[in-house]
Image 1 (cartoon, rainbow, N blue to C red):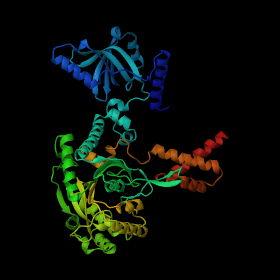
Image 2: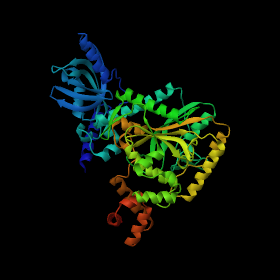
Image 3: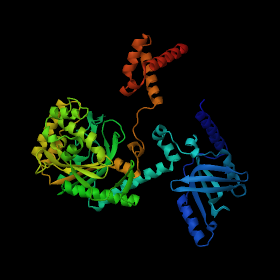
Image 4: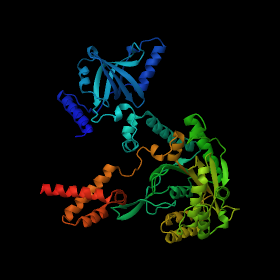
Length: 555
């Protein structure tokens, strides 16, 4: 039995003991009159006025984070979502409720009712007249409140992370305030918040691979959205001149410091605006968010001091690549020529890469790391942006920008293409490229959207802002996993071994007599690609042999 199991058993026995005493260890309700923050404020206010707060009874609740039992009196540390304070339980004042201490553990939820006092040491305290168990914890708190440090455990058990680390709770409060502030900003600009579908017939609006699902009742394959763009532009076409949506986006791609397969974005569209108007919108919004939430426009991030105050620098994409990579992309307008030049400067490429993907790789490898201070990278090749309007004076380019801070893209925007004939041709080109470059992701042709544009679409400026990445910047985090409450992770070792053992049992149930090599191959073929890549042949065979022995003993 593991140590955790022993703790669990001891606490489970206390649950039964409470029930034998007629006490429900998991009651449905408890009347709380004040949060801890409100109780502390009340005590401070009455003390300032020279009136004893003990004249008024309060009821507070919280998780027990500390116990100091001195026999006839005990001091408990309680924490709720607003703060922490001390509760004093005296045998002569609480009577039978004092016996709760025998069944009390760190992590339990407790309610106390009594008067507010200052102890002789000046500690704000609830002098309890009654106490009630509100929720018995069967597992001990992580590292007994000294802070959960194991990164994988923190991410896989975020609730334990929130319990143990004040800074983590504060970070997610900040994220929530960030989303609320963005919503207020957009509402204040006259934008209408709308909701668009998550399940789609065609996953279009971005160059990304979608998640695929099945609608059983309709017997139809559907896709989780990779962008909200096309439906929001259909709202513009319908006469809603300023719209936005804050929501989850799903892309079936890898995980790294700045990417999670599902993420939160704010997309907005404004009729009669262009990408210059949207640049002004972004820099004004981010400056305002920083001032409101952080009290300053200056951020410390990755060892750099960054000022998000408007105006942000505007930098031409072609010029940026020429400056940082020494390549003029207009002098290499075919994929073979550009790939050859990139190899000369040490950028790894393949002959299957499209020209647009090569340019994007140049940006990622050679330009983006230098964009530490807020910068709008403007005017992109048309091959990279099938939904943007052509630049009136730069042949082969469109009116698009991406905003970068600390070398990280935080937004993407363009003057929207509103010519239905040109839009159809661009989509058809994307479909042809998708066939030619099967390993790349290209935008898809959405017939419903094209039909909508044929009704007429006004000049429009569109924007997509990565809320996760803004949260990273504002909270000083270097990885997106630290600003997403429950991020996607690779399998833990325990999860991997469970998957292996399940595959072994499945093969044993079907084919109990096989050679070792044949058995190994069958099991390996049943595993997911991630598990198969991580499990060694020796470990798999060892676990299989153990399964064989267990089966023989059972027989």
